[in-house]
Length: 518
Image (cartoon, rainbow, N blue to C red):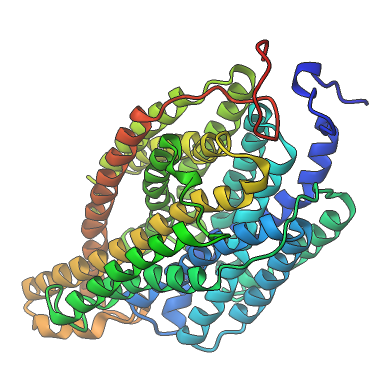
């Protein structure tokens, strides 16, 4: 059946029809689904993985953070490369990198090796995150992009829904946790083939000038605070000379990065383009979305397994409200945005709902009714789904196609940065709070609180009954605090969306003056 195209929306020379765009996006969305599915599968399997590899709570956090940090650092690099080289080839390379990291992670003999391979996975995910959005921006006008962003949001939500379920089933069967890394490889191969056959991206490349120094400065400035929150409170005091040194070095690197990116001929992060009011506020809001998205999926799975004693499969089932409502929100709102051109109302309402969901999650403990948890997760899913793709859309609407890669990647960079820092900070705070509550619980049992240090291993199966109950209660009672802190970040996101100025979505891919009728 021939696709019907609105002439007003396809007036730009060379514009693709709806059918052509869907064909081109099939492989992209399959690749994105592969990467996101792998992440959510691993999230629900982590308690088992860390238990069998005899890891600690801080290592548990770093299995997530390592991939997020690599994704964060590499996203703007991939985005800039997308403006300089063949986007199709780049996205295929990113898939190959991700698959290589996944296979190696599945063979990990210990936690340090697993962390290293998670970094490789993160590099591939950074490419997919940046390139899928950049390619969409290259072939779809902003006014039409809402409907396709809805498809992308649906893929993200479906992968997030199915990941915990599939991961739980794999972990609970004879296949074991290692299969959670292998299961996505066949789909990735299919995505490579589909991309090769269907994707056609406009060639708008220019003379390559790669910002090597900017990449080094950005990586260093992003990594140091992650190292600080990981080791502070355990290897040294929160207020110590090590803290002062790391934070001072971070501040210096941030200043150097900003100065260099403003002067670089081809900056990784186009600060001049991001100086637009909409871009700045969207970036602020994206940080909070990253904290909610990655922090929520990371710690809710742990809560259900450690605090409530559910199996990985049941933990995956219990997170369905979060993922299902994220799917519903992103799909429906994407369609409405394309039809009406209105997007700010969904950002503001989404941020408000996100705050409500996180505040409600901030009240949970080890005995919270499951129906209340379901309501809180549903609100959180609605908020994230309404905001995530529309924030990218709002920024893409302000730039031309020649800068779409770096600009889209910059928004994704700050969202991933928020997620990485959020998981690291919240994970460190959770570890400290859990340790304190375990010491108090053991003291109530007449056990020397100094023995809590031996409970750093997350293999709970070897703990005696009374001690196990103390540990479960500690995890349950400590989890609410981190969601309450995340709610504070969501309030900042709400304020940012309120002050965003709504600019009508243009009908063209390139940035040019619209006709009076448009």
